[in-house]
Image (cartoon, rainbow, N blue to C red; front, top):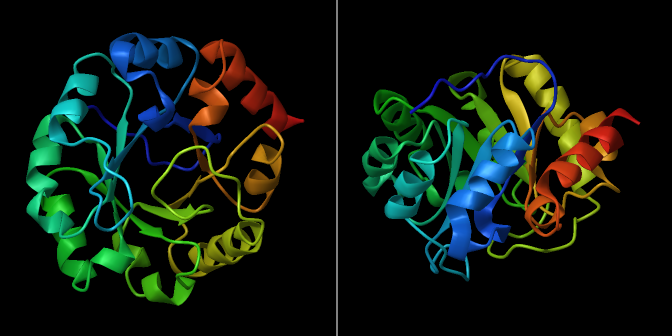
Length: 227
């Protein structure tokens, strides 16, 4: 593990390796690190909670061996409590779980913290913010999904902007130290909008790894945010 900076500050860019070329993953990871990425986002999918299977603990460990960037591990899996310790040992700095998979969310949040990682909670597009209102003071990050999870390369759901605004307002009232992350369909065209809506961490897959030059893609995203 490395120390993940959870303080408020400049917007962070977290390229999602879901869109990377897995035949040369180490090179891909090193290119985005050199290109100015702040975190790496790792989407773990089980084919049960979401209709796709990606990777598990060994890939997280392999990525950890090739970068000093914080690893933002997003568990889109059923029964995440069974795997928290393994992902922490593999090098996850922040573990995000879905409220939809965790009937005992407070217990799971406590487990993740006890294993040594920072903790995030994610909401699918149709899941209301009210489902996380009670847990917000206990977490480090709230992730708003702006696509239905399961596949990379999807288009941003426009209603996600309003949900981000309401999430930012809720955090300001109940947990002002918690970071607000957005994941799903982030591009140069909407990066500024989601930041204006309150997002502080932007997950981008195709907008970074789908471009021929990783550094240039990250630079364009930052320029779009600051425009």
